[in-house]
Length: 143
Image 1 (cartoon, rainbow, N blue to C red):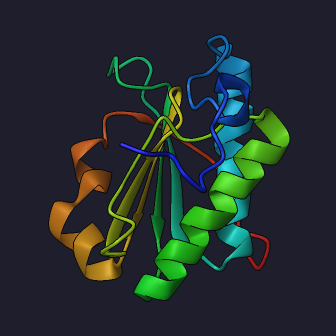
Image 2: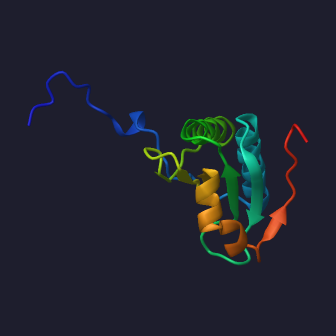
């Protein structure tokens, strides 16, 4: 197999998605708020921050956001990625659902983000499923 015409990649030229070290709960909460603000900047609706560290080993926080079109869902996801990269120098460990744009999941390690179309959010009802987690107050800019 030939690499003709391709620039070889060195390990330093590929951004690492793995976090360099785990964040403290305070830093995780700061990241969660930063993510919520990025979603709000793209007019995401019904933004909910859930502190799940006491009820799940998956993450410290979940963020649930509604986008009102597939284009908006993708724009919210992109804004979140840009904001986390800028403020925390991190990339998602995993991202699912970008091609479809009806439910995008972004896993940043300590914070997991769910961006849904309204019908997807209503159908899967993660708000109720995780209702035993502590809700962290978040006020959108326009409220």
